[in-house]
Length: 60
Image 1 (cartoon, one colour):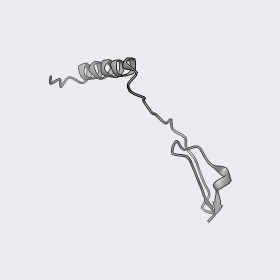
Image 2: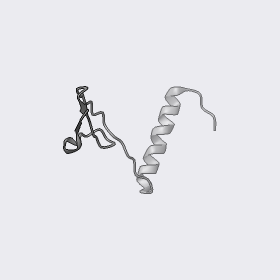
Image 3: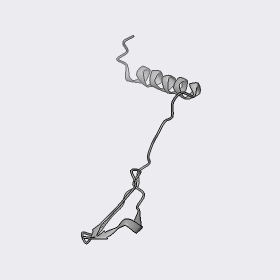
Image 4: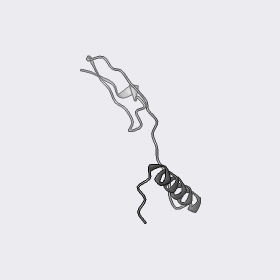
């Protein structure tokens, strides 16, 4: 199947995602945006999702 129309492709992808989710055989992993700002005097530590691990921060 070949589809070049972006709107039709979007519909197809959404249907595919619904089928995958309904099957229970897939787990979708997403991470929201977590902006963090640090001073140059700090070496930050974060989890992969961006959550700061303040107890692991160090001086630069």
